[in-house]
Image 1 (cartoon, one colour):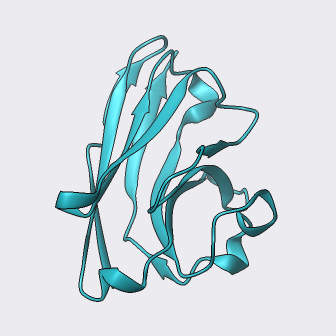
Image 2: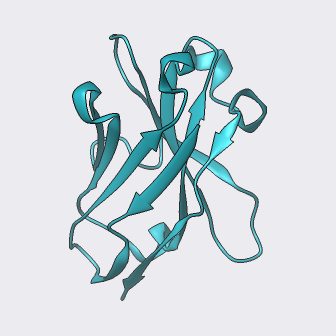
Amino acid sequence: VQLVESGGGLVQTGGSLRLSCAASGRTFSIYKMGWFRQAPGKEREFVAAISWTGGSPIYADSVKGRFTISRDNAKNTVYLQMNSLKPEDTAIYYCAAGQSVLQITTVAYKYWGYWGQGTQVTVSS
């Protein structure tokens, strides 16, 4: 499975961005897709995830109410709509895909087998 992100950039505090992630290859093996982020000097952290077959998305507390994850199965693409952006949202955002069922217990880094190259999001104050 190959993942390609797009949509990052520079935005002011309070602004919005939409990230996209297109999956190709053995996409039939994917059960979930999600987004992680990594700020300089920090560990990669979970942001949001969505099941490929239905059910409620899962969000990190830090982005609830501001970010929305969605998917387009026909295009094998997942999106992350980011609103009300804050400087602390600045990071490289990575798309991820996994072959295990999406549950609150399977959002940790180790449950994702495929990763994109990352896209930079910078929020200026």
